[in-house]
Length: 379
Image 1 (cartoon, helix red, strand yellow):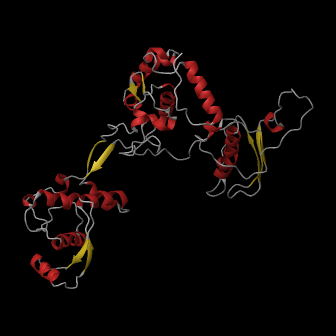
Image 2: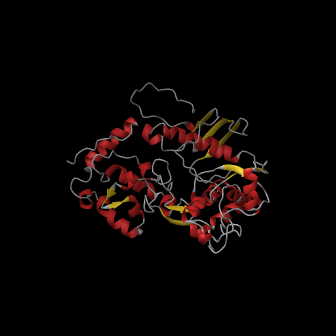
Image 3: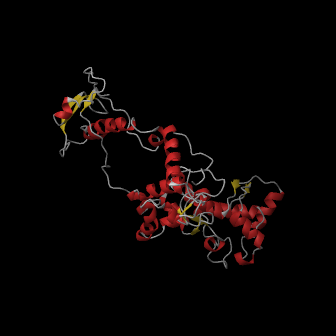
């Protein structure tokens, strides 16, 4: 993207800096990114420079879309394919030339907005270092292939627990949560989790058609009936006779009377879970949330990671357990490793030696290939 300087004929001469760099400027020519129109500008280096202007004038297009994007593009050309794929790219800017450009980093213009997946480790990037540590020098079970660093992240599809999807907790609806008063009948809205108004009445009318007693107290219904109504995945579609009593409904079915409409049944649990997961209405989500109960995920024990990642340990801890310790405890555990004494934090034969680890990592990074499926033996 930048202009190339002609060789002075000395094959082994040191590369010369552009005149713009010598003069202390980043020189941008013909910037056309987004709403920029052939903008030429000289930006002082080693100084605090502020781009000001009204909204939409092109400040971000010049700073981020042009200058930073080109700095990042040049940097990425110098790293290996493996490392390159882990870095978000800013794209190639639409510009004639940029000279005198140093390496650059970009800070977001807005405050960080932590999500339910955020932690101190992820915000400070400490977690990234831990993931690399476990990936490269962790103790793997016999026969398990080495994992990438992202396999140790609950925020990626590769690393998240398949049961809780990286949340650490599962949420479900139980009989106690959906039927708070079992002295009520279905007609009296014993199933509080079902929707109010017409939708709830529709489900009760469907149960009448299916032959369930909607006037008996919930606690007196057979267990198999209660379980089917609350938890079945079946969705039968049956004729509904709106406003009919159970007796009149039976007669209408026997005489094959034309129904008011055909209604499809949904169990109380499925209604709650599907509404919570898919509704666009915050009010409906809030309503069904009160019928859900949370518990630690039984697969990852609340550690948010897939079993293969949790099977890898360092200093006797899986990454989920280590991440839950206080920072001073983590520092103490990792101190020998930081001093270059890996053997002091792992049993003999548990990890690669430092040399073997470096050699394996260098080979994978250079080729951009996935981790080997066979672990080198300790030296």
